[in-house]
Length: 273
Ligand code: GLN
Image (cartoon, rainbow, N blue to C red; front, side):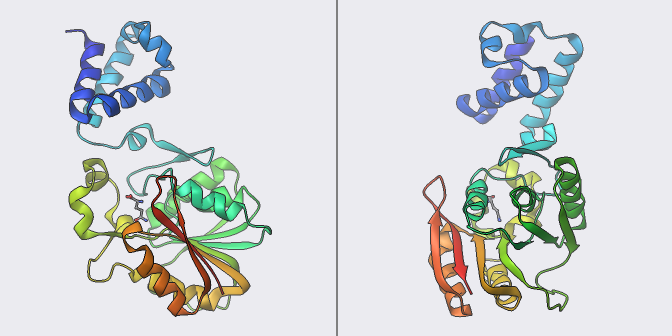
């Protein structure tokens, strides 16, 4: 059997034809500069011996469910290329809608992101003109985010902080945004192996008996640290949308509203102080 066909076939068998082919296409494009047209013309079977070795290595990792973005070492988000490693979550396409929502605000002011991970939200908004501070509990995530800020030329102040035990301060921000861990442990059953086996659980999961843990802490923090007229933005678990809105309203925020993402799931919440 031909070697090229074999990698592609293995991917199609493991991931299903559609996803397997999509992965193969991205690998060809990103690693070997071959377009879909090139694949149709069979140019993928003409790659050099060392490229063939590389393709087999990448295929092997994909068959072990390693996310493609970790293999490539980057993910694109809001038109920027972010370095990603297993120490941070891979940016999700729907999170771009949260960035657009905030970028659509009239003014530009100070902004705090809590739980920045790869830094994709904080950096995209710094590049949109906000004066950004970003925190994370993970030193490894902060290192990746710092690297991304330098590469993309964004000025962001990074702070190592656990939002469950914040250091007392009297700083205020115009906007506070967070995409905290919100996946309940009971949702694990329906999740893909690449997420479950390789992405940091610290950034994903919350206990079933207290799934709004971070929203409760961040809402309280935001009430104390938002300037007059400030706004709070969250990415949320669509399964808990109404409960999250109720929590934010009873914390004392007004104009709490839920917004859907591109997949029609209630995924974002915004509120004013
Ligand atoms: N949306 C992510 C996922 O589907 C979860 C992000 C988060 O927990 N904040 O895996």
